[in-house]
Length: 511
Image (tube, rainbow, N blue to C red; front, side):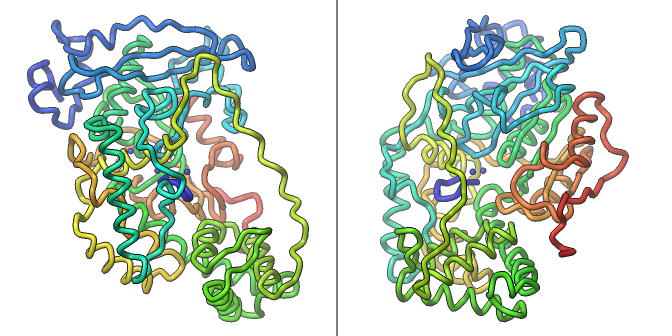
């Protein structure tokens, strides 16, 4: 999921059966190589033209473009591009296979993941696997979709207010209409199920019987859908910061609001113990009251934060995720309180963000709204459960503002999916015995703990590692205890004998 951009967000034995039914396709992978007249043969037998991705990275980091059908029920119809990258295993002798990577989203580009320093995989893993990055269909270099959205139209952080409801409904309808006008029938095929099928084409083109996988956030849902559709093609799957596969996608917005309330309570308790540092209240109740007064004040007169006027709604939206990191949230609220009182804020010592890496020399131009357009495509086309009546959103937003005051109205308010053309297939039900390892921080703002626990229940062969006191989105590479088990699983295939609990290096619950 994303912040201010819709997130940042998841069996046939013969060709005729596949073409006519497109049912849960659990044996589809087997049909790729066993059916004499396979309609996908033109895709699975491609010979990719590998070339160096760019001059800034090692020559072993190579890129290629594959073709896949836009509509898998019509393999002879329109084709789209899937941009794929590869960083070969460090040891030919120890090489096990391929490890596909996905950064999340939906709408997240993954082409550069094999060389992204943030990934920082252990040498053991890189010696055994070719690291495979790819931009999912409709994203980045993979036939990028556009809706021609303005910056304001791409902003989905919209709280419910009676006075702006009609305007917000118009916004949602406008986004859906513009996407339909710009991308037409393409949108209904930009789904998680089809991205999973694309992954299986990549597997076949690379000559692999199975794939291993490391996916983050929305990428955990994508990985889970692959295990459901292609269980026999699934090797070692690590799902880091997992979503609830039964709540896609409106339920995932609502889960953000549900998870924010216990995080806010924890923050108020932590901050009250540090009143001498932050001056926000001696008790949790006083801290909460300080925050509520700050919101009310900003609603009446926006607070100047470094030259940017912030309303109470702006602050609620910003701090929803920040409350999961108690120290950062205390510092930010104290800063806003001083600004509201007319005090000059202290100079920020936050380092400037590094610029985005330059695109590969062969890269096509990507529309400026591609992240929002591709995200909405998946969020709206993956499921047919979005309400169609705007009044349902109004009722739910009012209800959830009362239940979850910090973010409930944002989460349940109108979205473009209310007016979206239905996707090509129903939602995938994830319920299988495939092995997988789930990694999860206790205090994750984007994929709350309850969602990972639900993923664990859906994948009966999985083990789960929970980082008690862990803050932030993403585990692998941040916790030595969890890292040890994840690396052991990827390199040996051994899952932990039972679910494990690791501790964050500085578990704030005790301080």
